[in-house]
Length: 106
Image (cartoon, rainbow, N blue to C red; front, side):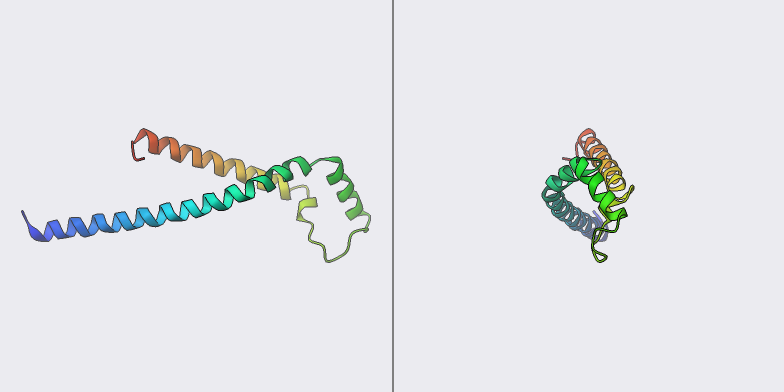
């Protein structure tokens, strides 16, 4: 056996192991963050288009709300775009998990 190739193989596999662990740790942190945000996403879903949201949009248009108030949630696209990104991201995550299961990588 060629020692140089063996050492190169082991070093390469070590790099893959470290890269995989880094990716798994990053994904775990991201999932933790997403799971904490999920209840807020549900609240935004209920808020968007509700009577409260419509009243808030109307009050904003009437100039009742203070100038310095952030109001991205009152735009036509703010919550909708976030919900679309959420759906796309969850679909991508589901596809990645399905592929990993098919390839027996987990």
